[in-house]
Image 1 (tube, rainbow, N blue to C red):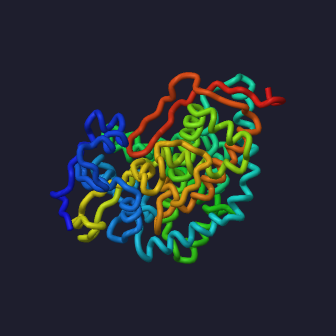
Image 2: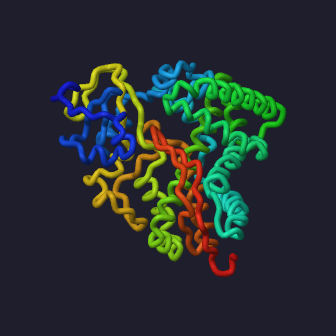
Image 3: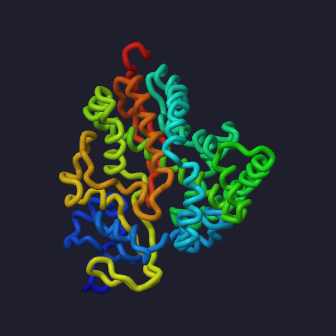
Amino acid sequence: MRTLEELPEIDPFSPEFVEDPLGARERAPERSWVDRSARGVEVLDYDGAVGVLTSPAFVAGITHIMEMMGLDASALAGPGRNLLTSEGDDHTRLRSVVSRWFTPRRVEQLRGAVETLVAELIAPITAAGGGDVATELTHRIPGPVFCWMIGAPEERADELFAMSQILLKAFSGDAALTGAISEQGELMGAFVAELVAAKRREPGDDLMSILLEAADAGLLTMDDVHSLAFEMLTASTDNTANSAALALELLARRPDQWALIRDDPALVPGAIEECARVDPKVREGLSYTVEDTVLRDVEIPADTIVWSSVLSAHHDPAIYPDPHRFDVTRVHARPQLNFGVGRHYCLGAALARMELTSMLNVLRENWAGFELDGEPVVERSFGVTVDSLPLKVTAARGQA
């Protein structure tokens, strides 16, 4: 058994690490599945990350980031309980309510609408021979889907997506953004209050109506309703938009892999998983220990911050042979961790996968190929944000 003091030490703030965290870890003089750093414990392999994400001794650490920034957690998460930070009976109750909307049938019913949306968005890009597919395509898919899900007017989609992007800056730990995040939190609160009033007048077949029905039955408080709406916005828009852009960047750099997808639609679902493995939108999971615990052979005291590297776990050769090879035909024996695992596994994973596969299916019918038309603008930290992805597009025959 080892204590934290006996672990190898790394510096996640060094220029080398910030520039290339995966390479820096792989080049470290002493390779280990777990290290320590100035910010806490660093878990680096797949089984270690799964251990953290599934053990009840580890809980989500978002409140610690908020405190570091001088923010009340409600600025990002709303005034009540949500799925990410709740545990035990509270988490079970919240999850059972929200999951009423996330059924396979309901998700699949949206596929046609998503494919129509993608076709409309790519039409001007295809006609122009290219464009910024981050701002013109991937950023504009999840906003309308969120509106359909929550029962909001679709014309609010772009506004809500922009709101979520600022709220999620809380994960950056940049205290200079505190004011902007608080402001967007207030705007989101006003939007939810407006939507609640609308659904009280006219309930529908949507998630907000389900939440209000649960509140009336005493399963949720109205603060919980607000917080769950906050969570659904940030979770359903940011991950999908940026995962889509990262997938297209990977495929733009590897036209041979796009050719495989273009010629075989059966490869699309696996390609989405491989793209998320190689360049995950969620690069790290942040947890802290609520009790003294043991993770494999390491003693970890209570109140310890623990960082689980999804990026490193996705390149664990014990799980993914030849992990640096990008291969859309790869069969994954273990799932990629972009959507988490265990009790906090993302309820919207099936919805996100449907959006991503729908996008690739429409693109493969309309684009013979595409390549980078300039360098993407990508911010990589706790998560990844793709602000710009300029592509040059070759239309499929008959689509020009």
